[in-house]
Image (cartoon, rainbow, N blue to C red; front, top):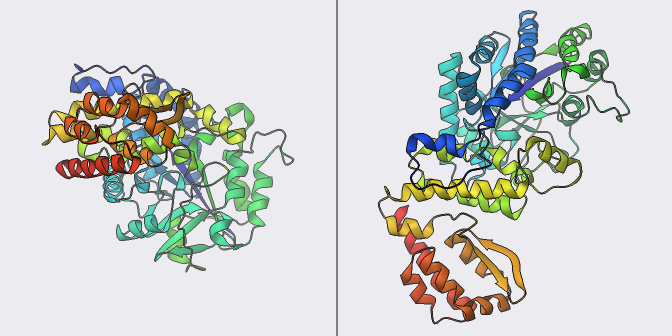
Amino acid sequence: MCKICLGFEVHQPYRLNRHFAPEKKLKKKDLFDQYFDSLNKEVLLRVADKCYNPATQIILEKLDEGFSCSFSISGILIEQMEKWSPDTLALFCQAAQHRNCEVIGQTYYHSIAGCFTDKTEFCEQVRLHSDLMYDHFRVRPTIFENTEFTFNSQIAETVKEMDFAGIYTEGVDRILGGRSPNYLYACRGIPVLLRNVTLSDDIAFRFANRSWERYPLTADTYADWVAGSTGDVINVFLDYETFGEHFWKETGIFDFLRALPGELAKREVKSVLPSDVVAAHAPAGDIEVYESISWADLEKDTSAWMGNDRQKTAFHAVQNARPYAVDKPLWRYLQTSDHFYYMASKYGTCGEVHAYFSHHDADDAFKTYMRVLAHMEERNIRVMKNRRSARTLRVLAPEDAFHFAGPAGFIGHTAYSLDQFEELLHVVPKDVIQHHVGRGDFVSWIAHVLEDQKLADAIGALTERHEIIKAVGERRELLWSHIR
């Protein structure tokens, strides 16, 4: 008998305030409303009306009829439903507590913390999510799904150490080497459920595509495809917003969802929960994933969040911001993957998808992010133990960053911190170094923006790249030792 394991990722971010302007006198109680956009309530209510409420009502009917599925719901979505749509949260509670439904673990903040070098923050967010699931649904997840299926062997090992029984990721061929995703595998000792990319994306991306040669997709046709598949289990995992938000009601997506369980049953396709898959099947083989994968874009890697220089700058900045995180929730909201997704600079269909989900363009998304992060750090310096070191090491807003230039103008490299300044000193052309040395730009920026007169004095008479790098590196390491 063929089996299908159907799961849904359910998430909405707190989008950043597109019009944020730093104000030194902001009170702590006003920070959240200043950092995050009033648009969030509007989006949540719209998605609840178009997707969450009608889709979950259908799911509840099908659960009562014996169909099974799982939900991975982010903590920050639950926060939003508590504030703005408690009736929607009540529907999810009914589903989560149903005997035919399973709640999947993830990071509370739907964050990129799993990509941090130090996994401490990642583990803390996973525990926060588990506690929230227990508080609301009286269950603790035993199967894990990292943000957007981001996965590598180190993440697998960390999740195993947290006593999860299994973990999801994308069934990409480069980790399977021609093997089928329709079996259970293992990575570093933890069972891995692999999403069937084709059968998942047939619904998630191609359902309403009139140029698709298999359009229109009906429940009976899809059930035939599942029933005709080989392997132990077909893992289909989707963004829940597929139903009613990405594809509107008028496309027939709800009719498809309502009819699918019955069509699967006619073909003797059994729906199962992920924990049942892990319990019933031994791994068919091992996988090792050294380069991170995900379910995002055509590349199926982390380039959706860390594919360009802007995204990498923001990623390293928020990772290094931990010592400044006096208010940890605010720092963690800034780790949500969506902020980095909006900064992408992709083209073609992937670029169109990024633009569809973003509420401002990539450059504005990056600048807004850096202004908010810089403001958060600036505010918190005053309560840190070594304020002088913290001030020099802080991340900077775009207006205060160092923009490398040559005689002909800006060369495309910008340092948003002393860390990044040292890094870029290794790669910018020699004539650019000499241009800034001759004008005294390095000394001026370090003295007046970073407010480190000792370092400014130390490099004041230096002219060679390696000398400047050595002085900056030694000073930077000393300053970090003061605040870590």
